[in-house]
Structure formats: C-alpha cells, structure tokens
Image (cartoon, rainbow, N blue to C red; front, side):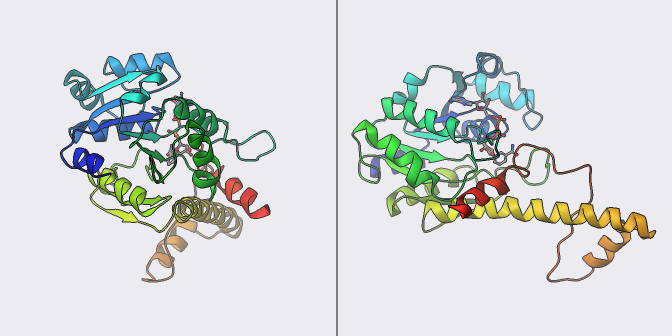
Length: 285
Ligand SMILES: NC(=O)c1ccc[n+]([C@@H]2O[C@H](COP(=O)([O-])OP(=O)(O)OC[C@H]3O[C@@H](n4cnc5c(N)ncnc54)[C@H](O)[C@@H]3O)[C@@H](O)[C@H]2O)c1
C-alpha cells in the first residue's frame, strides 16, 4: 500500500480509465492535467483513434485541452486490455443501462471485471465509477476479480466512487464537485481518497462502497422525482392560468426546506431516468 501511496503523492502512478465516454474522458483528461500518465481504454476503435489524435467527441472536453495532454504524452488510448498489467490504478466508467424489462443490466460491468481479473496485479487499486445499485462492488465485482487468485483488501484494493459529472455544467466540474469514496476495507478507502484528492478539491471518505452506491442512486432519484414533480406542476399551472415560473421564484424565497427545479421537455439523458430502476430492483430483492 505504501508504494502506491507514494506513487499517488508524487504523481508517478500509472492510471487506467476504462470507458471513454461522458464520465471517463473528462476523468482521463483531469488526471493527465494533474501530471499523471493515463491510459484510456474503449471498445470503440473510433473513440480510441479520436483521443489519440486529440479530437474530442463530447462537448465538455475542448480540443485544446485534449491535444495538450496527448501531445505531452500524458494521455494515450487503446483497445488492448492486456495493458491493464502496466497500471497502478484502474477506474471503471462503463455504461450501466437497463434491460428490455427495465432491470439493471450489469453486463458491461461484469464483462469488464472478468477481463480485469485476467490481468489483475498485486497492489493495484480498482475503482468502480459507474452508477449502480448498493451491493454491486462487493457482491458482483469483488468475486469476479478474486477469480484471479488475488484477495481483495489484501492483494489488491477495491472501492466505489460515483462520478457526479453534470454534462454541460460550466460551474461545477471535476475539480470543484466533492467526490465520495467507499472502499471494501479501510486501506482501499484511504487509497481511493488519496487518488481523487489529486484532481478534486474535496473528497468525502465513507464507511463502505454500499453507502457510496446508495448515495449516488439517492441523488439521482431525488432529481428524477423533483423534475417529475415540477413538470406536473407546470401542466397544472398552465390549466389554471398561473405562471409556474412565478410560483418557483416565490417558493425559492424560502430559505430552508426547498430547492428549485425547473420545468423542461422531460428528464432526458441516460442516467437520471434509468437510475431509479436500479434502486427499485434492489429494493424488491
Ligand atoms: N453521463 C453522465 O452525466 C453521468 C454522470 C454520472 C454517472 N454516469 C454513469 O457513468 C457510467 C458511464 O456513463 P457515460 O455517460 O460515460 O457513458 P457513455 O456511453 O458516454 O460512455 C461509456 C463508454 O464505455 C465504453 N465501453 C463500454 N464497455 C466497455 C468495455 N468493456 N471496455 C472498454 N470500453 C467500454 C463505450 O464504448 C463508451 O465509450 C454509467 O454508469 C452512467 O450511469 C453518467
């Protein structure tokens, strides 16, 4: 552990980011900008080529920032997962969609974990960032990684730290959005905390991955419920000839017990509308 701690502190740790989408690409750029050598993995060759050419494909990353880290040899992308062996830290940012029957589809997480278990090295820190239901890190990811013959918390470290990125938000970025971390044991939590302190101003350590997983789904369910509520209120106000905007402004004058949500064309995206099903599915169990 002390080796990795040292490498994180002096920024010589090699960091891998799996899944270079809305979550993974900004994270890869953030670690590179902090001075780490980052290897990004994506199954889409097109995305890998774009990263290596310094050409971003998501709005939150501009071409100057991406080109700068690529040209300076801090960020490189590949589809070759055998290169997991070269890394000290691996953050998993793969999709967590729903099945046709609206059950959690963890196939990306499980296949990724299987791939990782083939190349897992003693001393590595693995962090799951994908949004998921409480229990995934310990009940699903850990047993798959342990097929490597290595033991979690002893031979390798494992934590959950959800990404809280808000695509398009210019005010809150990785640096000024507090990051929560929960490891399967105290050492995993400490290492994950140290990792994210390199790119985020505030890191909040939690007692377990389950608390971190539940916190993330709770935050997204909170948004989903309140967006649905204000959209229904907007329809009612329209029928009653009341300005919903004036109502929201008026309610916002209350300094406690209320926070404003604004009506819009729906919830959208591939997180907020899906994540409540992750919690509901676990609740049914
Ligand atoms: N988009 C957001 O605003 C947001 C915010 C917070 C959390 N999340 C969560 O983060 C996770 C990732 O979301 P996203 O928005 O970045 O998704 P995305 O679809 O933008 O990106 C995922 C990337 O992973 C790649 N991928 C899939 N399987 C892979 C594998 N086995 N190996 C390598 N690459 C693989 C895909 O090709 C894609 O490029 C999800 O769990 C999501 O719920 C998303």
